View 1 (tube, rainbow, N blue to C red):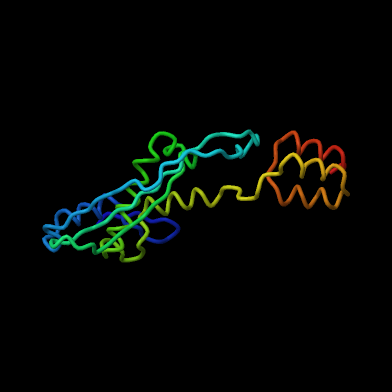
View 2: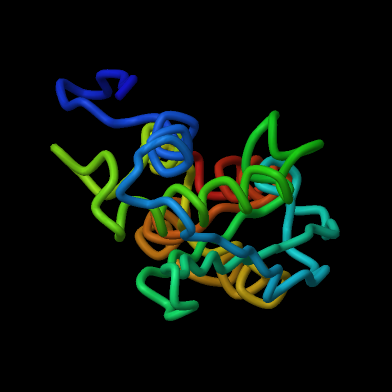
Length: 175
């Protein structure tokens, strides 16, 4: 099966898992079904500006059935519309594909080195570089301005914040 190397480890592509499932006589008469289990809009703070923005979260579940109609494997996936350039237009498709890849991996297809697919690992690697610190809100910002330089340094280290907040804190405490 076709795979790609990510950080020194081989990961099988989802399309290779699908080809194996559809062409291997061992799986003749088996089927798979995907269901979108979550499709919701929510608000979050923009990572750069702190501005409140809308985002869309989707989750899919894939179920694989044997010839008798018994469930023999499942896979789930979650994607955010804002998580990558590609997801901005294709987060629903990517999510469904990830769920299929996970279910096929759980069935034992293409798991020589990992159940995770190449696409899953690439997406996870991209998202690991994201800042996961909480956003500084207006009340916390105002409290920081009334505190000490040591407290301000801790806030700068511990929170993401609007550029104007950061600039004002740096200026006020001469950081």
